[in-house]
Every structure is written in C-alpha cells, then in structure tokens.
Length: 168
Image 1 (tube, rainbow, N blue to C red):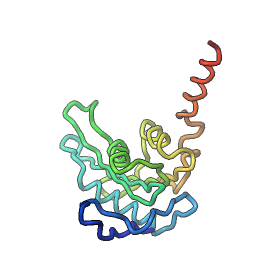
Image 2 (cartoon, rainbow, N blue to C red):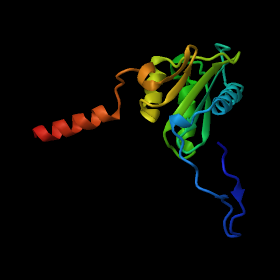
Image 3 (cartoon, helix red, strand yellow):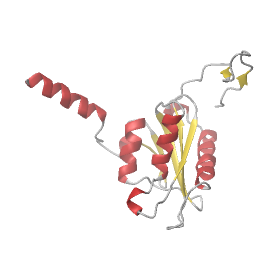
Image 4 (cartoon, rainbow, N blue to C red):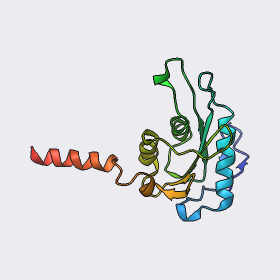
C-alpha cells in the first residue's frame, strides 16, 4: 500500500494533483508490512511528544480507509487535566487531512512497547473506526468489537432522536 505520487499540476494551480484515486482499505487488507508502517509512524510520532512532567512519551498511528497513515503524540500541560493524549492528537490529524474511517491502530511508549488505549481513547477510536477497527494490543491484534464490546456510539444517538421525535 503506497500513497500515489503527485503529478505535475496545471501552471495556474500550486496544489498537487494525484495520479490515481486512493484504493479503499479494509481490515482484510492488513499485512505485516502495513503493521510495520504503522509501528514506524507511531515511533516517529512518539519522538514529537511534549512530556516535560511525566517524561512518558506516547506515539500513535492509524491507517485510514483511503490508505493514508495518520499519527499523533501526547502533549502535556502543567494543568494535567488539559493534557492531550496521542489518540486525540491522531484524530486531529485525521480530520485535518481529510477525515475518513480508521482501519488499523497502533500505539507505543518511549521504548517502542505496545500500549493499550485507555477506555476514553477506545471510545474515541470506536467513533472513528467502528467495530471493525483492528487494534494492536500487547496480547495481539483484535477488532474494536472485542477491545470495546457493545460500544456506545452515534447509532445510539440517532435512534434516540428518532424515538423521541416519534413520541411527539
């Protein structure tokens, strides 16, 4: 899986024009090479972490359904409650670069060891990857349906809205 090379664009435009449409990616497409790319991006992102208080850098990487890889790192703050986790940073990059659905996710600490997303982050990842998002866990790779079983999500809110409207 490679990102298409930009081709020369028309002189009036400075934006790159891609030579081909991205190929949609799904969990069945995940290879060991893809997981190696995700791990490399998570490690690269981890080197950008801002952790002056805990000295515990975290990097995360996600594969998007259009073939992009997005990354994130933790960004601490002296007021610990407003610290950003690597998963939040990754989701910001996801939306800043065009959105999409996450297909695979990996997260590492400063030593490159696999980390488990906390409950809050599992919920954030579920919202943007759903039950089929594959998470690399210390025990092995698992779909979100196993990592966060019976997750609450946007569908619950949509059905609550329609139920509420039907009663009035």
